[in-house]
Length: 138
Image (cartoon, rainbow, N blue to C red; front, side, top):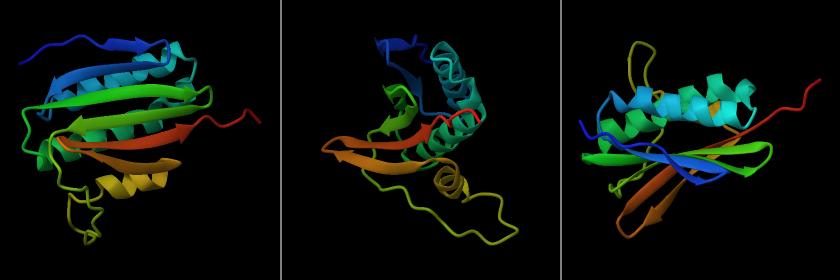
């Protein structure tokens, strides 16, 4: 297994290259948990770890790549961007699974939990990202 350490992109971001395998989802969740805790956004950990698990899972299942890159950024104080980059140009597709199917709900979950999500394409691959906004305390 390829081991890398998280890279601090700046005080507002972290990223890590991981093998494109199912076990990387737990590494990605740890990275998200650590970043959100550092930024005092613990209230986003549950949603953030679920979203990153789904994004990593999609990359593992559909990209056919050897590696993927997970990033967690804080573009604004109350907004977090979670992203998975791979070298596959195939767009992610939200499916409508039947009630008894065990797969195919990942992007539906991302869409329901994230404030917004999208895909950015490059000549060599794509980045699928989702954003969460911190809710004001009531």
